[in-house]
Length: 97
View 1 (cartoon, helix red, strand yellow):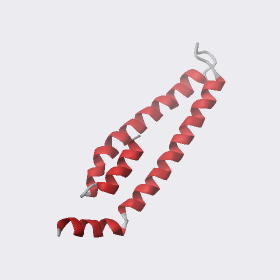
View 2 (spheres, rainbow, N blue to C red):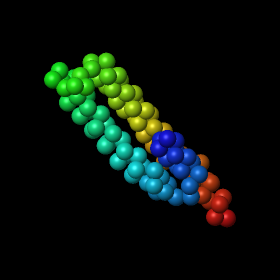
View 3 (tube, rainbow, N blue to C red):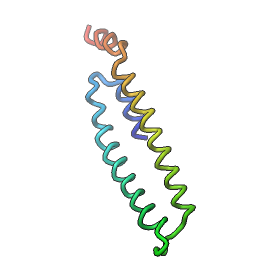
View 4 (cartoon, rainbow, N blue to C red):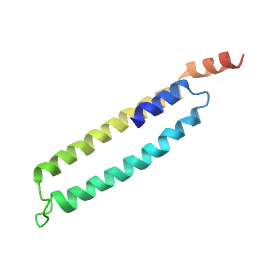
């Protein structure tokens, strides 16, 4: 959801730095959730002495981490494209005149 919001803000906002209202919470949540997932995989799912030991849960969690990383990479590519979009400068001059 944060990826969509940031892309939307980059498309419609007068100033591109407004995208930080989405990027800052998105980056915080991305880091904390992935660190927690890594901890769960290492200390719970793939720890044979843990009561939550489950290879299947560990594998599925790794898959989700990889897919989340792929989504973020494509989102960053999209944001870079939107940031460099020359139409933005044209729209800005039209709005000010």
